[in-house]
Image (cartoon, rainbow, N blue to C red; front, side, top):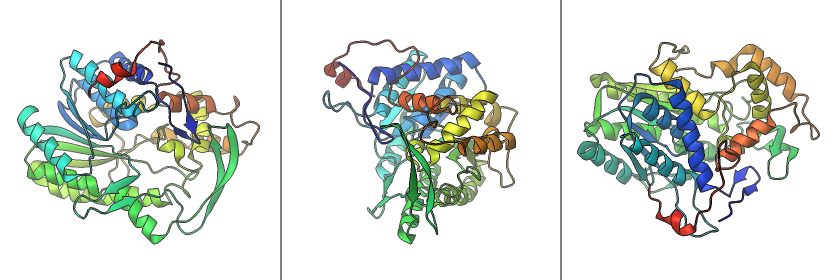
Length: 397
């Protein structure tokens, strides 16, 4: 079977299942190369099949020897034209590698927003996972959410607030650089975005887990955020995404009150800019990334998700190098926010045009390769193999 990379705009349509497996193995090798560290032993990761969630799971399993539960919504193969999603194969590759190390790696592939999923995970923790978890990671990225109580479905909108935002963007499908206008969101779009991408579901998960008594004394729960900088404030921090992240901050206080009697803690982790399926389609953000990555690569501070997440848990959360801001959020985005890095990124972005955006002036090559890796293409160490659709269908998560 031949696997073809197919991109529409900045959305990957084609996948290479075997390349996805190799990418997972590469991330495992990265963590093993760093050695072991002390950390949690029973971990629940909500949103575990790609990017931050997958990288977190890999770091904790192969860095601390943690047993893990991963919850994600993915699709398996149907035929040669519909091979499913990359996350489906990531889940399988992770489980196979973890089980070879004698670790528990349970995958729940279903709607994490539903009450039923929460109950199934709780039952598994009680009956087959030792009874309690000591870390809950919330890393769910979705554009839609159905409220499990009302049944109403909400759709998020990546938009500005108040006034339109005009700026440059890139299209990886046709290798173009163009000017885009981001319209302001309506009040309903703002509310729906907060409903989907805010902290409500995180709080619901923690309430369900607490009520079921499956959290250890001293449990930690983390939720990933991104605040950005002056260079992307108008369309990120100052837009609908920023309000959703602010809602997560508010829910942190609620969860800390909820966990107080078991000495638990809720922690917002403000992560750095990385290449994900989501970040690739945020208006203007790819231009910021190709400028930022170039500056950080030259400084030796550019990170992929596995590098970033491993640093977060190895050095900051379970290490001795934590950095907090004035409201108690963990700030591993410190390398991105470095004043010299931001000044050089701004200077570089102002030089970009249709002729040079994908030249050696920028890190377009890094961004494109990392984007391709998400779907199993351009993966280091990948050796082409023959596989049939029947063999892919026989894989199980």
